[in-house]
Length: 421
Image (cartoon, rainbow, N blue to C red; front, side):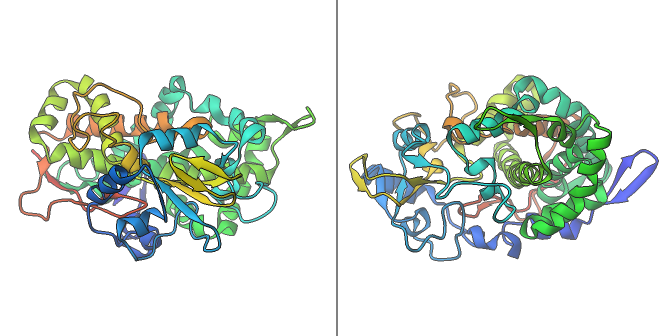
């Protein structure tokens, strides 16, 4: 896949490596349940009908005994419980005092550089102090900043690589590349190193090696990018003293943004595209009336969220929806099941872009609702809109294996082979 950084500066994005890093069936994602091939929703419906909360983990209760590590797993010495109803998940998200985001205090200066040692796992005042630093760059009004600086160019340069061929595989050649190039571009990382930094999520020292010179340069000469926002941000600590973020805090933010920015949106865009391509009449309606693209994206987020489970850590004994959960337990929130709760949505298993919009848990809930949700929506809206603009009669390739949804704790589509023209 050749993708120019500018009209006169061609660079190469290694397609085989993109597939390695972004195929749910590959070794990189196998540990999060990438080997799961079934539809989990019948089991989740049955569990939710039996009770809103069950002892056990989501994968055990679903009937999957393969590798399934994710947030809150594994903790073999802790009792595990799983919530399947919308009401139970909503209550847990809203009560961070009892259902905490981390089992231990978070300190970006200590411990492994990872999303689990970042703002994602903070609660209370600590979480608010960190979130307020970067939130202005992720509010709805800043979506145009992301679109103008990174998303729009990335989308069209990717389409340029296959627009004349009459066919494409959109999951790897398009969906997977957009978010990773968007977020690394916003860091000031070159296209050549974009996949290096994605792969480095399992090697934090490599992330520091890539980002350190960029952080040092932005301290000297800030630009209009995310690292510049971070180096100029001031945080007020618990004593009321303001200070700039140090390098460790910036790396912590960067890893979180990279994990969330390149690890979820590509799968959700693939889910949305697949849902539309499998329903040619709905795709045709969206092509003819682009106002329908937004509800189509929101419906896909509800119908099949790419990350259908998150976890919380119980800080005291609690009676929760008919179950006594002891202090120290892990409560897994099966938001995939919650997003299809018939107590909140009629005909919840149907993909219906005309249904009345109601908030779902696709981007989490409570104080930890996803910071980058407006950027993710912008990537999907611009990406799918550009495909419809530039690829006439876009449709699934009738001669190829059709896409299907796989994975457990990270769900997404397999290849999305299309033809057009």
